Amino acid sequence: MVLSKFSSISLATRLKTISLQLIALSIFSCNKTSNINANKSFVGLTHLAYNVGAIKMTLNGKYLFPDSVSFGNGTGYPGNPYDTTISQVSEMNIFLTQDTTQNIAGNAAFRQGAQYSIFFFDTLDARSVTLIILQDNPTIRTDTFTNYRYMNFSPGDTIWGLKLINNRNDIPYAADTVIIPASVFVGFNNNPAAYPFSQIRSGNYQAFAFRDSSNPAPDSSNFKYLRNIQIDSLVNYYIYLQGFYGDTSSSDPNKFQLNCKQLN
Figure 1 (cartoon, helix red, strand yellow):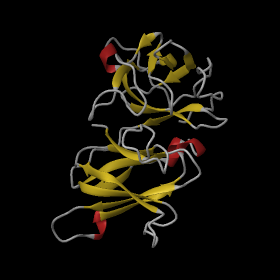
Figure 2 (cartoon, one colour; figure 1 turned 90 degrees about the horizontal axis):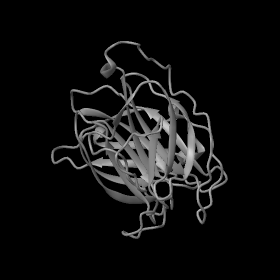
Figure 3 (cartoon, helix red, strand yellow; figure 1 turned 180 degrees about the vertical axis):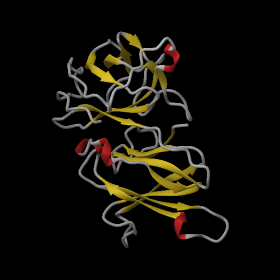
Figure 4 (cartoon, one colour; figure 1 turned 120 degrees about the horizontal axis):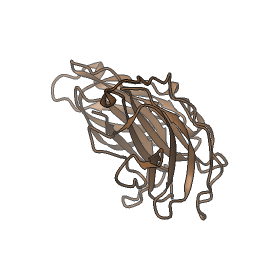
C-alpha cells in the first residue's frame, strides 16, 4: 500500500515536522493469544532521499532498528534486511538522526507473519519526501529460477528499463537475456501493485539500463552499462535504480547506479 504525499522539502533547510495518518498496508491480523512470539511482523527500511541525512525509525516510541540509516543504505544485512515488531497498529515516526527532527508521523499496521520493505525517498519537487511500503513474502523457488522486484528510484522524466545478459559459459538460451520493461520514477507511480515480483534464471548478469529501446542506438545514447549482478537460486531480490543519469563520479553517492538487494 502506498503512502500519501508529504509536505515539500528544501535541501537547504531542515525537514519540517509532518503528521500523517498512514494507510493500513493490508488486512490487519492480530491474534490475542498467550503466545506473543507468534504475533510478529518483519520490517526493513531503505533510505533513498537525496541530500537528506541519516534517519531513524520508531514504533510506539521505541527504536525498531538499533542503528541509523544513511542515504543509499538499508537496515539489516544481505539476506535479512528486516527487524521484528509486534503485528498491531503502531505509531510510526521517521526522523533525522542528527537532531531528532520528526518528518513523518502516523499509524501503520503490519500483518502477522508478513515481511515489509519501506523505501524512504525524495522526489525533489513539490511532492518532496515520501514513502512506499511493499509487502514481500514471494514464494521460494526450488529450481533454477528465483523472484525479483524491479523499481526505478532515479528522479526525472526518463523511463528506464533493464537488459540483463547472463554470462553463461555453455550454449546460451533465450531465457539468458532478460528484458525488464521500462518503468517511470517511483515518485510518479507509487502504487505497490505496479511492482510485482517476477521470475529470473539464476546466474551472473551484465546489467544495462535502457530508454526508448532495449537495443542500443548507433551512438548508444539510450543504453548504459551499469555493472554485473549475481542472482542465486532460492534467494529473492529487489533490483532498483538510484541516482541521477549523467552523474558518473565513482565517489558521488548520487551517481546513476544499480542495486541488488537480497531479501533472504
